[in-house]
Length: 221
Ligand code: GAR
Image (cartoon, rainbow, N blue to C red; front, side, top):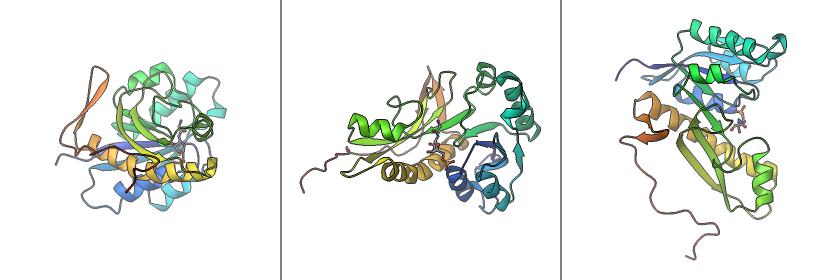
């Protein structure tokens, strides 16, 4: 195996996906294909910063409110990220729109997790909108970041059922549990060099494909 991929994780809030990445790739993990060299938050009060500190990871705050423009903010973030030697950026509940310059600088070296089966339900309030649309399967997507929000080559997806009686919070919890497995899976594939982008679509080598189909409601036994 080559040297571990040096990753900066960008957060804005709770950081439960960050925690899943720490559990999979953090300092306590032997032979990890990933080293988390930085956890950066745009919000000083983000609870995820505490998780990072607990794990002994380097943290930085780049508070967007202290910058005159989005461009200035992104330049400051870029500087902090590069100063750590990070080669790859992982957005984990990072809730700021990025400038085209920042996205271009990290083209095919930046991934995001989105709480829906893209291209369905880009943007905010995905669980509410999935319930309103009456879909039977919902889920999460990990994708490379492109300038248009919640677009970009898809690396991996997890589907969950929408169940009778679901509300936004029960559905969100089901999706989030899947996210916590999905993000480490996708980042591992990237770090192991098994993911490449061809004509703006992802090709994965040597990963087992899902078999069969998902049904909701389930097929009769
Ligand atoms: C996650 O559900 C993630 O998919 C979503 O924010 C949540 C962050 O939770 N991201 C987006 O909506 C990005 N557009 P976390 O802070 O506990 O990981």
